[in-house]
Image (cartoon, rainbow, N blue to C red; front, side, top):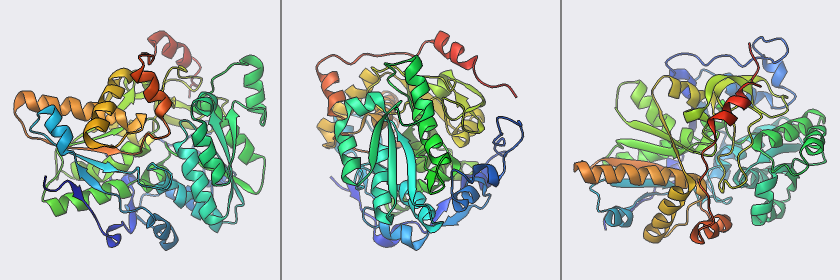
Amino acid sequence: MADTKVLLEEQDIPRAWYNIQADLPKPLPPVVHPGTKKPIGPDDLAPLFPMALIGQEVSQERWIEIPEEVREVYKLWRPTPLFRAHRLEKALDTPARIYYKYEGVSPAGSHKPNTAVAQAFYNKAQGVKRLTTETGAGQWGSALAFSCRQFGLECKVYMVKVSYQQKPYRRSMMETWGASVVASPSQDTEGGRSILAEHPNSPGSLGIAISEAVEDAAKREDTKYSLGSVLNHVLMHQTVIGQECKTAFERLGEYPDMVIGCVGGGSSFGGIAFPFVKDKLEGKSKVELIAVEPEAAPSITRGVYTYDFGDTVGLTPLIKMFTLGHTFVPPAIHAGGLRYHGMSPLISLLCDEGIIEARAVHQNPVFEAAVLFARTEGIVPAPEPAHAIKVAIDEALKCKESGQAKTILFNLCGHGYFDMAAYDAYLSGRLEDYAYPRAEVEAALRGVPRL
């Protein structure tokens, strides 16, 4: 089997992140202060983020140089391999050419260190001693714990309670790197205590965990907050993925007809897709871009494009995004990550403009696709990128029906070796499909602030 793996060299690690804000069809709506209802400035964000990251969040520069200290850490696993899924193609009997970028080779097992390393570096450079964050399935918390260890920072992780219970080895991984991990909602913050007082058995949500991490950071001068998705600078850091893909495809003499990624907050999809979005916006390609989310947390496909808080308690500024309402709590039966109530403002705008397509899928078909992928390609995928695998398979089967030999690229943004409880539930027939009810969405959206 020719061209099964495309291996890049160390010199192929990108030297700059791609900032899609320079090429958007129209500017992002401003981030708004919830009290004054006016656009916020750098001083409003300074208690939470270092100035370098605040500058990147609003920058209109197309390319932001990657510090050499960050590239040195990247070299532990980057550049990551691009694989041709020959065995999956054969199993599907499809003329499609299926490629996947495998980010599970990072120390934390996912794409998340691409931004975690950068954020730890910039915080360290400003003299910060400690970072707080939230994590859902544990991939982001693992990545930040690893990255804080690289730069000598303390790390406190508020882990969504249902994941804390389902994935104890993710917690152990974070603690091995020196992080302190608590189940959220917790007794460590006022926000956590108030939620537990009202809902003692709350399974938690990313919105709740964000509230706790933000509150923690805001109360300590030595501490900043770190977010693993949604924000502009986070997605920008992830564009090393898509840039490496473009380099690999140039070596192959190919270009994808379709780029697919999972979306929870947007970092995985944005990372692989944005460099290709650039080509589409410039009229250089007609590539299809598909963002795949779970039916249990369908922010784009069933949410509303409006201003909302980024957290549950209402401590963050108001961001215009596709949202299910900041009080949204995903069902405990939802086995993967991708649990956030909102979507990246960048991806939200691109979806609203029709440049990106969004699809929602149920978790049983997702795990069916994941098992087929594992049995053909050998890698057990995390539940999150398994959503992208499901749609990649759907599109490959359409190629079989039509006889078209499209080139399909998806982001395998992490392995699933800490997610075997979810696979066990699927293989034993205990995994339930759940479509988040429209009535629940409408109820949550009634609490969205009005500008």
